[in-house]
Image (cartoon, rainbow, N blue to C red; front, side, top):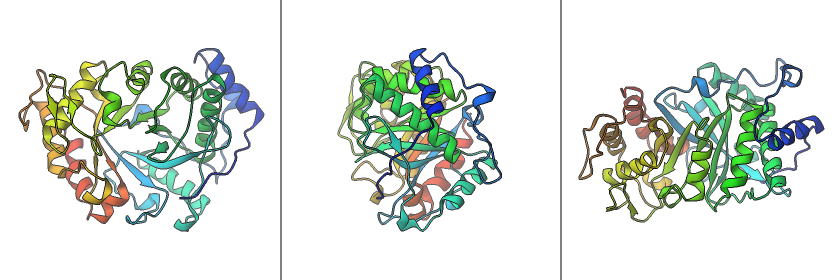
Length: 341
């Protein structure tokens, strides 16, 4: 995976985001500071307000790890939110940057054009931060400032619609909240998604869960990773094993009962058995779980005490592994998500 280059941020942009942090998020970019558009620059963003009520999220891999290599143009049409994986840490705490992997032979100009083309189709394209090996630390005012500034800069440079938080080595809810508030202040229609591990969403007291609740007013969706996980507690206090419909439904229930709106909860599963170490389920099981949560049908031994027809949808790692598995995940789950009540 290609490593990052250092960013050189415009002084005005640093000041704008710093002001947003200082104001506690009560800040918006005015017309005079809007990113200038050029014929070769980023196209109009889609924005959170345009994300479908029931949405499918897929991660696009900016590296070759044995899955099918794709350009953004190759990403299957069923995906409503495409998370570009990943932005990398720089030498400055909190700061991130994005560089296309040279192994993909994908020009920056074409990448930007493909982002704009996806957006023209109504898709959101966001940049994901972290991943299994991504160590980005936001644990101070300075690092929160650097994180927010760098994300806003990447949104301006590439035309990204927002950011995905996929930090798998812990986060600080106080400073991540500050950073995300600043990004939202600068980009009011920003798409913000999160992909915590199961342990991170077992209690509203966990840092990831607290962050999600802190930004509930503009959070798009939490697509928890229901894979590479041991057994976890459901909202009924019982323990459920990964790889079952009950695991998906009972843990989604934990998030909703803990304070998230059903529209902010998505089910994240691997696109193929090779895409994760454990936790793969047939795409039909994902559909059963969604039906259980939305309609009260298709449940296993766990049945929620209420229906949540507003459940947001599903996520997979990754669009590349999906392609390598004959698009089974997206062709099965995508139409089902879009047909939810």
